Image 1 (tube, one colour):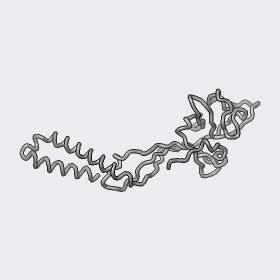
Image 2: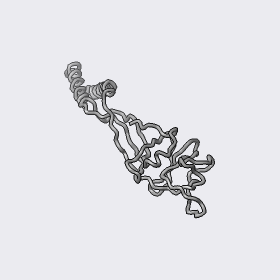
Image 3: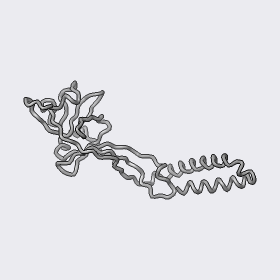
Image 4: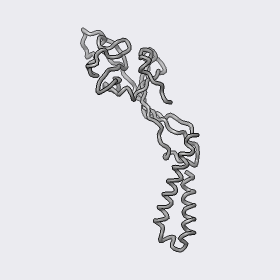
Length: 194
């Protein structure tokens, strides 16, 4: 933040020395010079200092996951679809009493061009592309939720403005109870970049 104040004072003083009596007539040019110098100084300061800044995780939102009733003959013990032709809703057991139930908060299936993860929240079945979802263990056996987090720079420096630092990464993660998390194949689990 101090970089803006120094830019305004320095450019105003140099412009006053250069324009002298015509300073007020050239005020728009001076404002343009101030904006340009402040932008260049801010970018230079950000690039030079952000490598030494710590990172913090900001939780954007958290949505609880609900238990789904899946058809046991269509998913295996790792909650992975046994048929690549089925879509998201075909895996659900919609009250048919002749089918065996399997309860889970997630399942994997192929659809829309790749591997997807299905889950239920807000009384709605949703799915996301596996490439953009991470998995982690929740705190206990009854808690499961879907969370969006942003990894940002933790700025305590008065010279750099917080709004001028970019967000490093946006992460979406499904937190599952330890028993369900242990059932996920190791090839589908990626380490959280936190």
